[in-house]
Length: 80
Image (cartoon, rainbow, N blue to C red; front, side, top):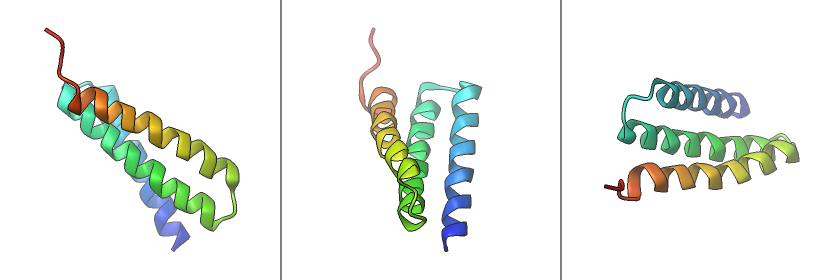
């Protein structure tokens, strides 16, 4: 089970990074942050299940960073 979670977290993180680096559009970047959020939440579960506090703590913080990205790119109105 932990392997499936780990690979899922890895895959969503890679896809999100590609989406952001491609810079397709504001909406695509926002959805990439949604994927990053899922990735971080899954990594939190993996960190907990494997008894790895550094992974858990890092991804708990990254979850908030990613939620800010979702807010900035999908919720906040574009200026101008």
